[in-house]
Length: 301
Image (cartoon, rainbow, N blue to C red; front, side, top):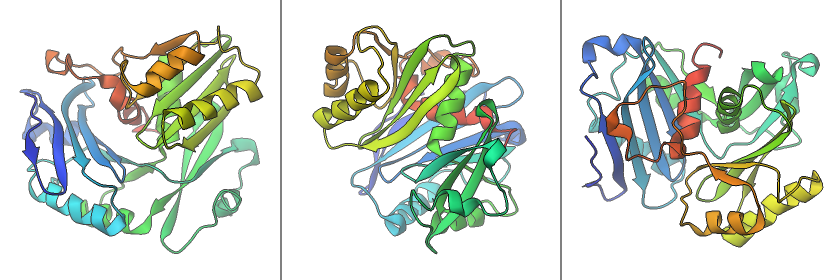
């Protein structure tokens, strides 16, 4: 069942799909995957026994929220959701978007002082908590910050649970390598958000480039994409460019990508590592590629 008409003064429920197979008695087998930004709150529940996606919801905020506004809004969402605040989930994984990050090769990583690797990106403050995640496929460690208030809120919401916080790029890269396990040549991958995008370049199976860019409009977006292609001497005409995220074929960004790049493909196929019922047929699942990819990390973090 899909609903998109539940509206609050601060947010709107854009997407709601719940399978008839969702059973409260079986929640101890379900992985809860959450994607949180200042503009939206998304989550899905996946049965770890058969990898079936049983629940998908997205709340869109009407304005960009600061941390206190975000947590206040989450309180309202949770107060009106009978499943979310249940503490029976098998595991809970969370992406907090728009956070600084860096990747460090495992061979060079010193676990005794992880904060020093992020100093050049952004010095840590008392409002931030450092998170480190192994990126086994890359033989690297992903380091990022999580807002302390956000971490504490989820710890209070799910007491006595080991909650996994993951940077968005960690999930995105995991999904790329799962989607293209035997990548040859060079491919580019872009995940679009409303005000930023992730871009990764894979050359002969090795990660050559990964970064996050903020942008104002479609022209700004294209400038950064072209800059990366030019710097890495990639062929705009022939190098595959795969697109995921909050973008559609009729959007200004996608139209410009098709104008400047010759091998653009919107990844509309459902991820193979999750099973979907017919209820999801009308949902652009590429919008949630990072959320679904988060499921891949459930046993490795």
